[in-house]
Each structure stands twice: as C-alpha cells, then as structure tokens.
Image (cartoon, rainbow, N blue to C red; front, side):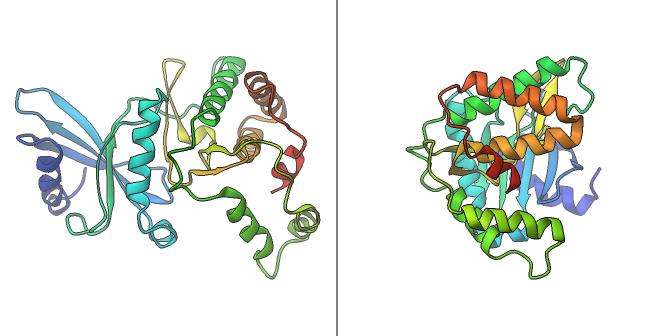
Length: 264
C-alpha cells in the first residue's frame, strides 16, 4: 500500500478518469525499470470496483521523447481498435501538474508473466503468433513513432569508447555490414518483446504491455530481440521453437539479415 499523501494526490485523478468514484487503495507494481507503475482500485458510484494502471515514464524516456505518454496513448488506442491484446488506454497528461510528472492511465489486466510454462511449444506458438500479428499492423497512422534503423545506427556508431573484446568484435562486423539492406517492408515494432512484457492467464496470452520502446522498422529487429530473451530465459531449443513458429506465420518475410539483427 502507498502512504496517505500519495493516495491523496491520486484522488483528483480518480475523479478525472471516473467521476463520482472513490479511491479504495493504491500500490506500486514491481518489475519495471524504465517507469513508475502504480495500480489503483476504485469504487464506482453504483458499487462495482475497477482497477487501473498509472504509468509514469522515467526521466530518460521523457528526455528522449517529451510526448511519450501521449504517443503511447495514441498507439494503444490504435492497437486496441485493431484487436490486439493490449491494455485499453483511458487518459494521459503531459503537464506534470497533477502527479509531479507526465502519466498514462490504462486498463489493469489480470495476469502475470510466465517463466515456467507447462506447455513450452504452445507457449512459444502463442508468443510467435502475437508478435506476427503486431508486425501485420498498418503503420500508415503511426508516423509519430521513431525509426528503429536510426536508433540502431546511433547505437552502433556511438558505443562506449571502452567496449569489451566480445562487443568490439560484434561492432566490427556490424559496422562493416551497416546499413543493412532493406529486404522487408517497415513494420510496427514493440521494441522490447520478451516474456517479461507478456501477461498470461490460465495458459492463454492475455496482454502485451510496456510499449514505450515502440518504433517502425524491420520486423527482424523485434524477432532478434525476442530470440535473445527466450534463449536466456528458456534455452536454445525454446528459441528455435519460437523462431520456427514465427516464420510459419510470416513465410513471405526475408530472413537473410537475421544473423546481423541477432548480433545487434
């Protein structure tokens, strides 16, 4: 639970989101490193309870994009309309006047990350199908998102002046190959698609969360990031299962540059 001062500061927000409702409790959610995430339980005028999430992006993300709360709100609106499993966005504020920093308010989805799936193949197939669905989203109305290739170009050309020997070898290969040929149409990228940003309930994928790193670019970027995370979390066999399933959902993609994205 949060202290009384914090709860008091949240009451005007509750009235703004759901007039006539009262705040029952508020608590911080653990696990996020790039944002402060607070869960709210409110009591609506007719007696039903409702849960919300208040997300305050960290200073690094706000410096990179001062409108990140508004951009994530717009993105979630479009994804929800497209039928993707994401939280419904309810409100955002860029002024920082109400809570001391900009924020985004969205639906609280019951579920949690699963790092011990009982059926690994079904788990990987659901992950792959969802990522493929994300990469099918029409990007024509998402021009406010950054270009992922530009972000990677900056990373590759402006890395630490004292890289490790392994990183130095990787950078040497990438700098030689960069920029990579554009073999696939630009797609919506989650930007950090990994098991920790996916909620599950009763064995079914319930939601993909934490969209602050969303961008437009080669879908293999997202695939490579997910492959690395699945390799670390579950091992090589799981990574290959996931990759096989993803390729089956998007067979027309050109996977020629995947080794470079894996390295990046």
